Amino acid sequence: MKIAVTGGKGGTGKSMVATSLAVEYARKNKTMLVDADAECPNDHLLLSIKRKLHSNVYQPIPKWDFEKCTKCGKCAAVCKQNAIVFVKGKYPAFVKDVCIGCKACIVACPENAISETKKQIGTIYTGKNYGVELVSGELKLGELASGEIVSEVRKESDRINGRLKAEVMLIDSAAGIGCPVIASLTGTDYIVAVTEPTPSALNDLNRVLYLARHFRIRHGIVINKYDLEKGFCRKTEEFAKNNGIPVIGRIPYRKDFVESTIKMKPVVDINPSYRKYFSEIINRIDA
Ligand code: SF4
Ligand code: SF4
Image 1 (cartoon, rainbow, N blue to C red):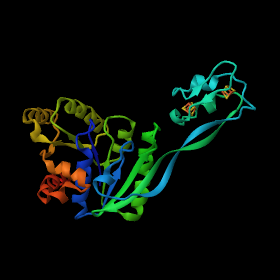
Image 2 (tube, rainbow, N blue to C red):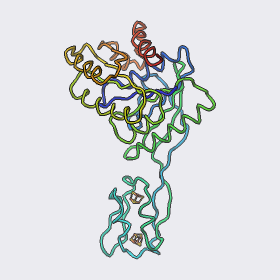
Image 3 (cartoon, rainbow, N blue to C red):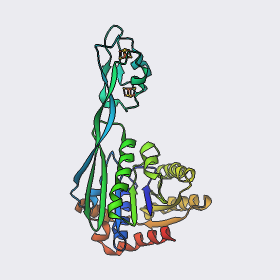
Image 4 (spheres, rainbow, N blue to C red):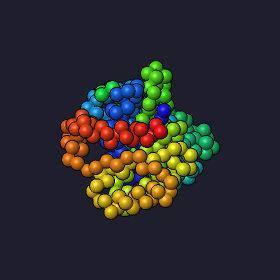
């Protein structure tokens, strides 16, 4: 079973929920956790995992042969990323960091002066702790193609799982509704949408659930820090009821969660009584 853990807004506790669910699942099932939050992967920190290099991720980029270039500027004109700077009478200048490898410039060049090479855009790491097999993708600093990394980390996780045969694969997605999130949700069986009782979180939750509906993936809401603002928590519950979405978990706000982050241990390790919150979510997902 593949379960994506996402949240429209950053900071709702998505990674805490993903890692805690992974630890809870791993008590009974072979479990893999895929950290697909490639811009800020931190599941390894929350689980005290020292990651090992698995593989690098590359992206195609153009390479110029100025012997052939006639300085026509067509390559710069087609580049939507503004990765090619062209000044009349000069050779085009390439801003490598913003290139997304679409190859439009290669196709547009009438002189065949542009060929293809590659650059590293990220890294995939692996590791294990608390019975959880972690596959973690990390975007190289300054790179933009986090969607590419997520797609690669998803493919690589499936390849690794061919050997590990995990029964449960949890995918900790990036926040938001962009390309990396879509790459995280695709092909999953269930989406856990983590929110908190604030107006901005509810607004963003609505946006991320649009994706769940669009892809027709079963989904449920987890309200983290639900007791922080009980009035607004009721609004979130009303929203869920009005849209026919189950609230599959309510997690209170306690200082143990802060301690868990500082000590780099799952909260259920700091205080085992918290297991009930995550086993309840699992029961609702499996129902
Ligand atoms: S590959 Fe695409 S993004 Fe990169 S320089 Fe060429 S046109 Fe621009
Ligand atoms: S399109 Fe080709 S020939 Fe024209 S400026 Fe670019 S590289 Fe040179």
